[in-house]
Structure formats: structure tokens, C-alpha cells
Amino acid sequence: MLHTEMTLDVKAARTVGSASFITTSGAYIGVVTAARIYESKSGAEMLDIDFETHEGERAHISMCIYDKSGKETFSRAILDSLMTVCRVRSLKAEQRRFKDRQGTEQVGYFFVDLMGKPLGMLIQAAPEEYDINGEIKTMIRLNLLTPFDARTRQNAAEILDQAEAKAVDAKLKNLKDKPLKKLAAQSSNGFESAPAPRNSYAAAPAQVPPAPPAGDFSPDDIPF
Image (cartoon, rainbow, N blue to C red; front, side):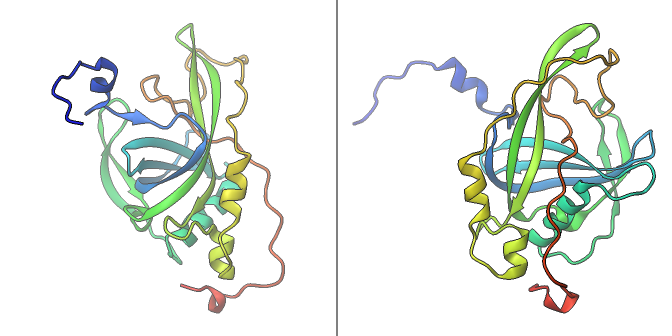
């Protein structure tokens, strides 16, 4: 049927040309547009990932990969899984210019080999309350649970073992947003990793480490 009459949908009109951010748990396919490594004020090493889906939805995920004592965190394994999904055996950060949240141009270190490659991310949304200048606001903290191959849907373990893709869809069936985390005592500026209010996303918290793999796995066994 030919639609010869149209009525303005204001809500739909607002979505065109404006940024849309991931706010719900799910499996998303897209590319990493930025993967910046930096040292926090406390001395921890952080990895900031900007991700954009094929539909234009965006996410910002910040992970601590080494604590201030230099010890690896669970998120270091997340980085290894990202490397596996991107078929990258080693990373060397390159200096690039970027603009921070205030729009100021800075120079940072980026893992370019993780950027621009199609991949999937299983993401869990975790809403949290923050005190921003005396006003309580709810923001969405995004947890990267599992990177996976955009074409085969294999996670890192399945790629390395050349196994059938099952884990991502199995997790997705029971994946839900985390319950709202009510405001705890904190500074008026929120946590160091808290997002600016306009973005509605934040850093992923610490997670429980996975069980160690069975047997030894040499570099010669890596299938890429």
C-alpha cells in the first residue's frame, strides 16, 4: 500500500543524527572505535573502550587491567579475549590525539589493532545512583562479559579450541540487567571512573575470575 499521507513522529525524528547509547543488556555486533590505555590518578592501569554497533548504538566501557601495585586484574583476561576475537597475538600502543570529555585535545596511547574490526560484545547493564553536585542521578554502568566473533559467535575459548559456538547464546538466554545499585556514601563528584551525565555509561566493576584452563596451551597451538 502506498502511503500518500504522513504524520510527524517527533520521537522518531529526534533519533536521527543524535547519539544513541546502549542501556540494556544484550549481545551487540559492531566495532571498537577507540581502545585507549592510561594510568589513573591512583596508579592503576585502565583500558577505555569505545564501541559502536552496526545500528549506531554506542557504548563506553572502562576496565582496570592492572591495579596500582601492578598486579593483573580479571579485566586483563577480558583484554586477552578481545585479542583472541580480533586474531591479534600481541599489542603495541600507538600515540594518537583525542578529545576528552571536556572537549580538550589530548595525546593518548591506543591499541589500534583492536579498532575497526567487526566483533560482538555480550554486555550487561548495571544501573547505579550517583550524586552529581548534590543531585541524585541514575546512570548505566556497562559490564563487558564476553567478546565474541561477529560471524561465528564463538567466544575466545571456542576460537582457541576450534569448538562450536554455544557459550554466548547460552549466557544470553539468562542475561538480565543488574538491579539498581542505590547511592552509597561518596563524593559529590562520584567515582573517578563515573561518566559525564550526558553519556549514561560507566566503568565495569571487578568480576569473579574464571576457572583456569585445563592443560597447557603453547603459542604453536593458537589457531591464528
